[in-house]
Amino acid sequence: HRVDRRQRQMCIRDRYQRRVRGFSKSFRKTFVRSTMEGKEYWVVSVPAQERDDSAVEGLNRFLKSRDLITEQVYKFDVPTNLRVGSIDSLMALSDDLQKIDISIENTVRKLGRQLWEVMDNRPERKEILINNTPPDTYVTKFKWEDARFSRRKGLKELSDELKIQVGKIEDELKTKSSDYNSITQEINAAERKEGGTLMVRDLAGIVSKEHITETDYLTTLFVVVAKSDVKEFYKKYENITEFILPGSAQVLAEDQEYTLLSVILFKKVSEDFKNLSREQRWTVRKYEAPSSSTKKDTKDLITKRDRLRGTLTKWCNSNFAEAFVAWVHLKCIRTFVESVLRFGLPANFIAMLVLPKRKSEKKVREALAQIYKSLGTGDDYEKDDMDTTTVAILGSAKFYPYVYLELNLDIWL
Image 1: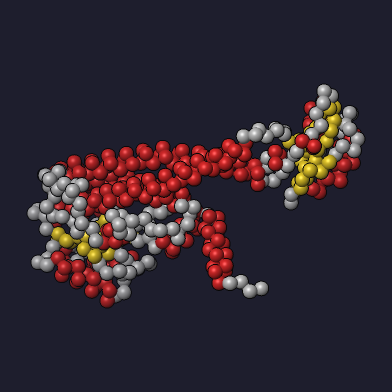
Image 2 (image 1 turned 90 degrees about the horizontal axis):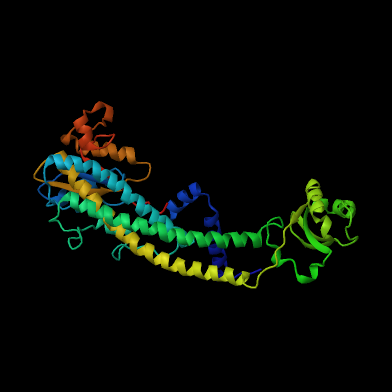
């Protein structure tokens, strides 16, 4: 049969969406990385040269000639006129900044995951923008936002403001995501009842009034039997106990595994029938007549869920941008503090963004050690080999002749 191109494309798209929703978390992480291109930048800071662009161009030429980077080397525009204070205060702040960095990054990732979930795990949705630009463009063209983060403030005051701002966003996220997840779980539970096997499916959509006999003495029970045992059921059910209405068994529904039957019997033996059925591995299902509002309640939940999804998507978009901006400014402060502690005052350094090719990280590290060997040894030193003062300053298990931080934009998982 001939299928036109548009229909074929729609089929492929729908199949793709179903596959992504069904991925395990670990597999989806790999899949999303390949489709959304999360980027893991290295922030590298070294003493400034006479011209900033010469440092950037030199490193770019060096790494590109060895085919080690995915993009050009960018200047990370860290202002060098932030308020310093004393070296002792910077050393204390260095440890605090590392903790704040981790905390803010975690919030950014939570917002990204929540946004991914409310968008139904569909990576083809429009990209999130930070100040009208994609996240990676915001980073590579970063400019300090003086209107929001005044350089006249001390570094600790700035970092505390960022921490408080993002902390409020995370608290609000917990509340909003809890409300959304609660409704989603209720809908999922209702859908499971409607779409599961006869062992769990809601009987309200199967049993009708004509299937029910209810008098002062008689009642109807609904029994789920494995399909392979139905013949045996017909042989036994009339004699399993007294006062079973002969020939009353009636098939009401079937699925791939089970058959649902109704049986009419005297009320006084209903408990005996239930107990004896359990011994035969038959399951007597409890039937509750549906209220007139049941379907309406489910529809109301879906309507409310969709409304919350729209609100939460907009909120996550906006606050993801806020948290992301705060995170990049915090990285900027960290780069400044680590550079001053490493290279001294007055602050005179150049920070750059390097994006190594995947599986080329070790070679990039070796290349950086070679080009910046004049700043110190190119070999890594383990923390155990350093004195406590050096460890306190560096805050890292490795030492490099340049300041090194990570800026991982793989923020969706």
